[in-house]
Length: 548
Image (cartoon, rainbow, N blue to C red):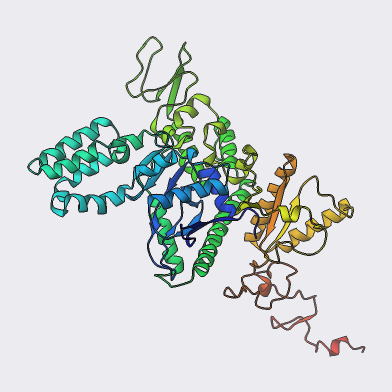
C-alpha cells in the first residue's frame, strides 16, 4: 500500500457496496491547496459491468489546469452520494473540511439541500453551470420557441456584472413573454435566486477566479473518455486500475512542467531594470508560469502606465499617467482607484484572483508574495511557506494508520515493507544510519547520480528539482520522504501492458549520446582514415608499420 493512499467504501443497509472513493498523494495535495473551490459532476458513460457512474471533485490548479482531489465510482448521482463523497474527503484528509469550501459548481442535481446537510449554506456559494443551463436546462424549461425569444436576456442576466444589469435584463425578458403566465413564473423563479444564477453575485465574489461553471469537471470527463475509450464493461477493480493509470500519466506531465520551470529559473535573466527587474526575478522564482504571465507581468506592465498619490489619511489614489491631477485639486479623476489605508485594492482582478494587482504594484513599487493567495505559488514556494502542509502525512486506511505496522519493524534489512510495490526512504533525524558515511563517499555518489542523467534533458530537470527540494527540506529542518515507483521504469523501451523493461540491461547512463554516430574517429597525420576514405599516406597502412 502506498503511503498517503487512502480509500473509503459506501455500503447499503443490506451490506452491499454502493460506492468506492480513493485518494492518491497528489490528490491529497490538490485538496489542501485548491479545495476551496470544487466542481462536482458525474459521468454516466459506462466503463464497468456494474454501471457505476464516475465522479471526481475537481479544483483549479495554479496553472489553471484541472486538479483532481479524489476519484469515485458510485451507484447513483444523488444528494446523498455527493454528501458521502465530501464527508469521505474529510475523513481521508482531516486537514480539509467542507467548511473550507467557498464556491461549489455543479449541475441541477447538486442542490441547496446538499449545502444545508453539510451546514455550509451560509458560507459557501452554490452555483449552477452556465453552459449547462444555457444549452440544456433553459431550453427544456421554457421550450425551444420561448427560449429563443428570451435567450439574449437570459444570457445577459447570467453574464451581468452589476445588479442593475441583472434587473434590467429580467424586466426586458418578462415583457417578451408576458402573455404566457406559466413562462413568466419560471422566469420569476430564476430572478428570485440570484446567488445561483446571476452573474453579478459571482463576479463580485472574492476568489471566484472568473469561473462560470463546472467546466473543469466536464473537461475531466472528456479526458476520461479520450483515455479509456468510448465505453467498456470492465470489473470495478479493472476500471479503478485504468483510472489510476490515467491519473499517474497526468501527474507525470504536470511534474515535468514544474521541473522544467524550476530548472529554467536558475538561468533566467530579466529584461527589466531597477525595482522592476528585482521584482521580476522574485516573481519568476515564486510563481508558476501561468500565474507569472497572467498576473505579475500584466500588473508590472499595466502599473508602468499608472501614477499614484498617498493622501494625508493614508489612502492611496491610483490613476492613469496620461491624466493630469494637480496637487491643489481635491477630487481625483473619475476612473481613479482608491486603496484605503490598511485595505486591499477594490478592483475586480484583485478580488477575483486574490493577487497583487497593477494598482497595488504601482503603490508598493515591488513584488509582494504575501498578497498572492497560496494557490498561485509554485510547488517549491508553497512547500516553504506552508510547512503545516507537508508532502508526507500519516494517512488512515479504513480507520487504521497504514504506517503503524512498519514503525516498529527493523527497516535496515533489504526487504521492502510494501511487498515490492514501492521503495521508500524516510529522512528524519530519528533514523540513524548503521554505517558511517564519509563526505567523499557521499560526494562520489552524487557525482554518479549526475553522470547517470547527464544525457537526458528531461531527467536532469527532474533530478535538479528533487535535489533542490531536499536541500530546502534540510535547511528548514523538516522531515520528508523519497518515494520510488519500482514497477514503472523510466525507460522508453518499456512493455506498457506488462510493465516490463523489455529485457534491457541496467544503464550506466540514462540514454546514449544522440550525436555519437556523427563523431568521426580522429586520425593522426600520415594515418589512413578508412571511414572517411581519406588517405594520409600512399603506402599500405599495414606495410608502413613494418620495418624497412
